[in-house]
Length: 373
Ligand SMILES: [Zn+2]
Image 1 (cartoon, helix red, strand yellow):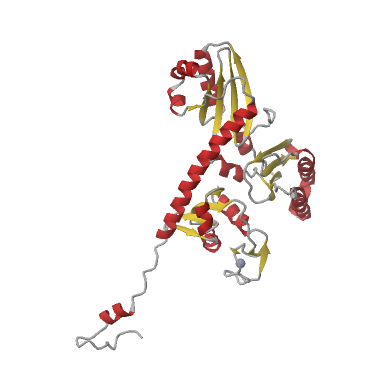
Image 2: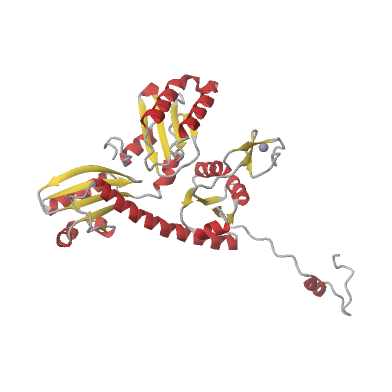
C-alpha cells in the first residue's frame, strides 16, 4: 500500500495538471514495465538519447534523479508502466505506477505530459469503501489497483458517519461509494445516505471493518475486472458490427491510415500486440511496410513497435484507447481496430455483365455500340 501522500488522489492529479514552467524544463518519463525486467536498460537508452539533444542539455540533473528512482526505488508490483515527473529547478518530483502500458518516452516541456493518465482516467472508477461495524467505521479510497486508508471513525453514530462519508466522497472526487456492513446495519444506514450516493451505492456485505485493506482491494479489483469484461465485450461487438457497415476499420494498415487522417474516435487494441513498422524521418508518416514515404518520397526507417506509435498518436488526438484483454472474437478478426468519427461510404459495386447487357442493348437485342468493352 502506498503512503497516503503517494496515492494517486484526484487532488494530486489536478496539481500535476496545473503545473507550468516558463523554460520548458518539466521532464516526463513514461516507461513501459516488461515482466522480463529489461525496463531499466530501455530507460538508460532513452536518457542517453536525451542527453545528446542540445535542447535538453540543462536537464541532466532531472535525468539523473529519474534514472536513480527507477533503478533503485521503483518496485514494479502489478504496475505495467511507471510515470515520473521532474522539474529539479522548481523542486518537483512525482512518480506513480499505471495498470496499462503505453509508448516509453522521455520528454521535456512547459507542462507535464499526462496523456496516459488521462486516457486511463475514464476507464477506472475512483471508489470510497466504507467498512461499517457497530463500534467503528473505516474509510478506504481505491483507484487503478491501489488502495489507501483514509480514516477511522470511532463510535456508532450512523448519521455522523453518513455525513462524513458524503463529505469525503465529494472532497476526494469519488465516483461511487462501496458499503461493507452486516445486513441489519446496512438496512439502518442506507436511508441516512445522501440520495446521490444511494443511487450509485455498491453493497459488499462480505467486507467489514476488520478486513485488511488488501482484501478490500482484491474484492474491488475482482468486481472491476468483471465490469471491464462486460464493457470489452460490448465494445468488440460494436466494432465488428460497425466494420461491416463502414463505421469502423480493422487491421493494422487500415487503422494506421485512419489514425493519421485524424478520423478515429476510439481504438481497440489487443493487449501485448506489437509489430515492426516503418516511419518517415522527415514527415513522421507511419506505415506497415512502405520503404519510401508515400507523402514525401524519402526512404523510411524501421520502428520497433508500430502499434504503440499509433496508440501514442491516437492519445495525442484525444481518442479513447481500449486494451482488449479477454475477448477471443477480436483475435479472430484482427488485433487492432478503430471506430471512425464519420462512417466511410462504401463505393457501389461495379455492375455485372448481365446488368450492362440490359442497360446497353438495342431494341433487337444486339449489343449497343455504346456498351463499354
Ligand atoms: Zn514522409
